[in-house]
Image (cartoon, rainbow, N blue to C red):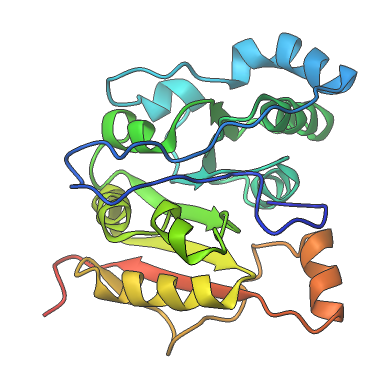
Length: 246
């Protein structure tokens, strides 16, 4: 989630439609980034505890967090400000952030240390592989996808993260009643998200179209500035149904 003006979140995405049973090309575009000394220190000191290695086997969340609690996965947390705030305000829920960019991982680890968070873990890996291989079906209480790269140009729309194959995969990993929450500040992408999410038979919209921003999603600095300038932000909140919608 961006805290500085940018057309997209720090979770750049590059997903090509594919069968949910087959891994898409990638869920990101890897970019170089500068590591601050605080981020590097957090990575060195806190990484061994809070960064989970990618494994091609289902995650034992109880072992990873040291307890049994609802688990929410976030794809692409950027620099982690909103992720840390959400985790701090929901101590009874565990959060698993998936991010490929090392500066963002270091920044979130720094926040974890400063805020004393114990209910947050990170996997630095492609989110598609994490979902397919580390997350068991019907095991998540929620999924957050906040401000993914909108890929403005029409020829790049195929790179957008929210596409039918990935949405089907996300829905399969949610437990019945689990929540898939997406947000974007790019209206054409919001319209595509609404169309794609509404077409998934395992998901049901909680609103008549776009949802009000849930109280647990904090307003980022970038978002607040945009709203003051009259820019829109669209939240989409869907529930996993117990059976496919007719």
